[in-house]
Each structure stands twice: as C-alpha cells, then as structure tokens.
Image (cartoon, rainbow, N blue to C red):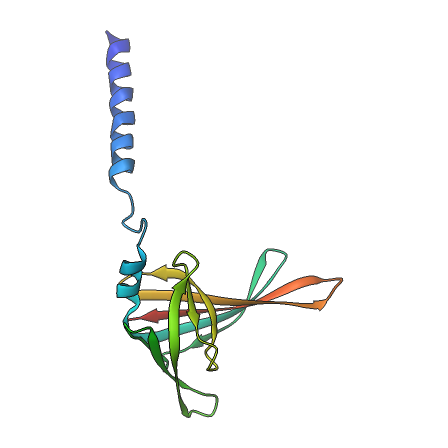
Length: 156
C-alpha cells in the first residue's frame, strides 16, 4: 500500500509540473508582421544607448549614454521622424522610411539620412523597444574581426 501511495504522490507531482509548465508559456510566442507593425507604430522616447565591441564571442561594453533627449516616431505609411540632440546640444531632425525585414526581426531605415542602417529587434512590447546595429571591421588580419555594436532602448 505504501508503494502505491508513493507512486501516486510522485505521479501527481510530475503531472502538476507538466501542467504548470505547459500552461504558463510566455505570451511572446510568434508575433506576426501585422502585430509587430502595429506595436512599432507610434512615438518612442529614448532611454539608453550602449556601445560595445565584440571580439571572439566576448562582449566588451564601452559606454552607456542617456538618450532621453531622443525621440523616434514610426508612422503607418512606412515613414519615420526622429529628433536627437547632437554633441553641441542642437536639435537635429531626421526623417525617412522604414520597413520590417528578415522575418520581421529587423528594421531597415532608408539610406537617405544619417540614421540609415539595419537594426535587429531585440525586444518589442507595447511599452519597450530595444534595437541593435552591428558593424564588422577587420583592423588587423592577425587579430581577426572586431564588431562594433550599439544597442538602443526606447519606452513609450
């Protein structure tokens, strides 16, 4: 009788964990392009920008800056507007076009402004947007490739 109770107890624990883990999936599963676009569209306020160097799979953060003076607005027609303070404290406005790419994991900004480039979407929710751009460069062939990375965090 003891073995039956012990088996039943273990079985119930396993069943409980199985039910718990299968019913508590994150809601971040597959976000469709339509949903991503509707989440991205609107005004985003900058928080931080972290510059890093990546070499041999090691990440070396160089600098984190406050970019609370940066604003990005994504429009439904595929255009964007941004406002940034430059090094001298002057407001600089940029505008152009944007599209989702690569299975909706990247945002491509047009090549007609300084804000051009491809940014990987690291996180996207109704209130958070985190994007990263990387550029590889070989400075010394003996030391391999170095990748410069900038990650920007935005909030609504």
